[in-house]
Image 1 (cartoon, rainbow, N blue to C red):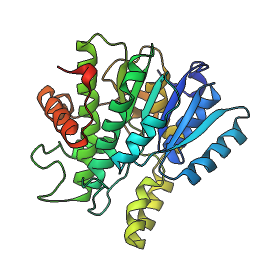
Image 2: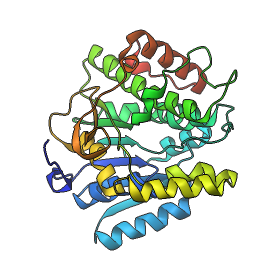
Image 3: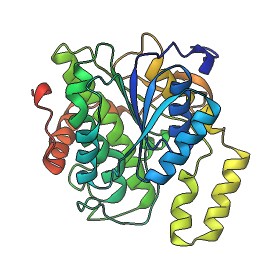
Image 4: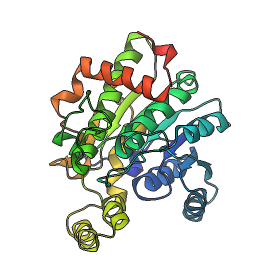
Length: 308
């Protein structure tokens, strides 16, 4: 792992990958590098126009790359089902649950869930469940879910998953990122219990400069906060290319362990991929099971093949 970079990605020829939020930032880099190594990559994007533009940038950079665009709005479970139903490939080697929102003002998804919990966790929970039969049927398949070092700010509140009692934008974000790790933990446990070969792992980018940091302030017209975030990106953050490395490692490196958490090597902030610290509550079996059961109930997506 020391010094691991995109040159170390194994050949991906013959593999099919779905990357959510692949039109920009980390997702774009992950999709581009997988395509560069020969994978067929489906860019799962909320905006088809931005997805097509991203696909064009990838094929300009990687002539002959196999990329296509599918519309996926993680804030709408109807859209998640349409994407899964419309995916043309029975073989699915890799699902990268990358898309997300951060520190938004309080809002709700099309299905009435708090936006950060709904998009970052429930949308990906539903997508993974709907694609599970294809993943289980593909030898060597992986699910990689992107969390954040910010998960350390808060555990999930199982009594108030949708922040209806009290809302703080950063705490809600942290809880959604903890939910990503609890989901990975419980998925890995169930896969092991059923003897499935599918690997569920997690990654985080440290502090990487993407539009995630500025989207919330921009949406509210908070210009000073937007400028502050942009300055932080310029001064402290690593590039999206560097920030994508832990996800690419978790997605492609040989020997990645189930329920592993990969991040940057230097203080979880920047640098080459390395095993990352995680809050102890993200390894809580009871919390993982209860969150899983609540997620199945809320999304109405059941993982029948992994029923306890």
